[in-house]
Image 1: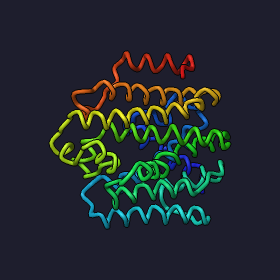
Image 2 (image 1 turned 45 degrees about the horizontal axis):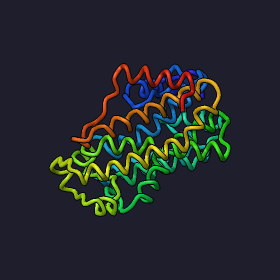
Image 3 (image 1 turned 90 degrees about the horizontal axis):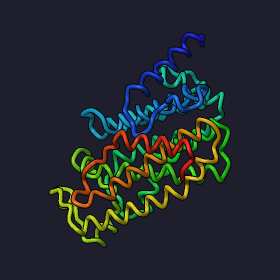
Image 4 (image 1 turned 90 degrees about the vertical axis):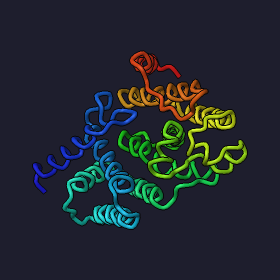
Length: 286
């Protein structure tokens, strides 16, 4: 493969990563320069699979077929077979240079496949299992890239990534329900608190739903805080980036906690909030 072809593959991933808004930066200035391209490749791999699962007007079977093709290309790269696809040209280079575990990429595809086939979760354990597939692999891949993938760091990363995934669920309750007919709230806990799908259907933010969300927010904050020591232990820019991310997640939880009259409102962080996040990241506030 020519150097120009590889450069084009990396540039494709960087361009795609920079075109999408996320809750935290992708391949941002805060990350070590040497990791920006690999992180953009990982993001692109997940972004494309996510789009297969959610975007467009495809039938469920077509979505599953596209995800199967994504997995087949991943397997081809793992077997050393060339793939005529810019993403997988770059991914092949990243995996070889950084010895990334392929099972983490398979987990991501499994999560997006589950988005097509499953839209209700019976209990909290089922929700956490989804988080382990959809969110935790990203944190683990970052630790592998940075050479910090010891057992303690991986456990802390899992807690942070699962908490971030849960925060996304709690701030998008109605959007997930209306656009994708998905409910990530555990059904057994909804029943315990006297909450039904009608609450989502009719935008009913009563005392029962507020109590259910109080419990979710409290549990998610506890999970985030259990992993947050990692953000002060990682050195340099990666630690700083992680502190920006975790502090942003905690502020979103605080905002959700104050929305007593409307649990469906999506929090928006103000300039003052971002300054607070930056200050906490700089001074390693936990």
